Amino acid sequence: MRKLTFLLRPSWAILAVIVVAFAYLCFTVLAPWQLGKNTATEHRNQLIADSVRADPVDVTTLLKQEGEHTEWRRVTAEGSFVHDSTVLVRLRHLDGAPAYAVLATFKLTDGYILLVDRGMIAGLDGSSTPPPIPAAPTGPQRLEGRVRMSEGVTPGKDPLTESGFRQVYSIDTTQESMVLGQPITSIPTGERGGYLQLSTGQPGAFTPTPLPQLDAGPYLSYGLQWLAFGIMAPLGLGYFVYAELRERRKERASSAVTPESTPDSPTAPEARIADRYGR
Figure 1 (cartoon, rainbow, N blue to C red):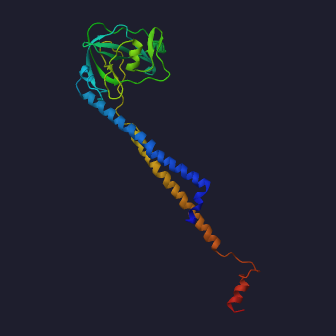
Figure 2 (cartoon, rainbow, N blue to C red):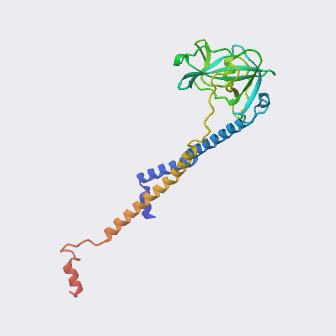
Figure 3 (cartoon, rainbow, N blue to C red):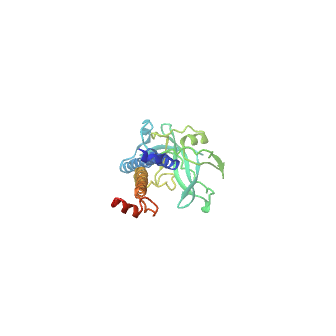
């Protein structure tokens, strides 16, 4: 054990703490974080793929399914748009130019009021100024779209009125209900309340937000890399300890070899000759 006492030196102790902490983070935080994102992405892609193949269902059937994950489901809704319910979502982009998402509310025939994303519209002349927004069609309508989960509220980004429009920074059913002063019913999505995103060609629709790319992304690779780093770090420390021990053995072996003696030394060549012949 005395051979390992050098590990108690501050430099070695600090290095060991850093390596152990790094490996711990790799296995408990970094790798699970990336692997979790990979699992969530695969689950989302599967939901989107299933929704593409499935026939649309009446949205009222989903309003009664509390706790179920209904995002991306294709649905139909019958009712009419609520007058003067336009809200713009800021900081969106369409074909690389500033744009707005246009929201409105839609009252179902049974009285529920849903939040509807009519799609995106480009800013005026490529700027961030909103263009004139055509009003939603009046009268009874039958809409088809997808259920989307609310984005949540961005801290410090409060609703405002600008250029004659009520504007927000995210699509959130609770916030839009407060902005419009209407009792909006959220579509259950399992986590946050959901809204209806119109499909192409629907009454009052603009350019729909495109579906996400159905690929898993690099998260699995990143997760495996963090696991590999968590394994390699202790192995690297072990190698440095082994290299230090090897160098110390070499130094001890070198010091154990008798150096070339001086003429006055008892181990000088003359002394060795005298010993050999008994003098």
